[in-house]
Length: 89
Image (tube, rainbow, N blue to C red; front, side, top):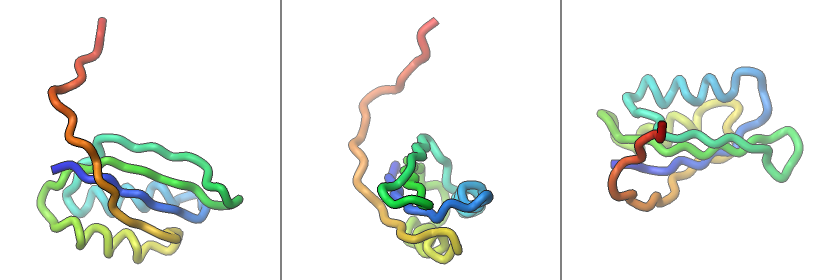
């Protein structure tokens, strides 16, 4: 099952690496990652589409919220996409 994860981080040199490390160690796969500046300076918005692998998603959310650079984190609904995208070429 795919889920969307929306996170606001404080800009720190290792913030994104720490975030993805927690997702990886909990057994989730990142299928899509989007990183953009937040409206407030010194903050970054991250949106990730993750696939549930082994751990409950609520456990992942709790672990992400404990990270020092995380200001807020929550799940958002993702539409189910039919079929797969195949690269052209």
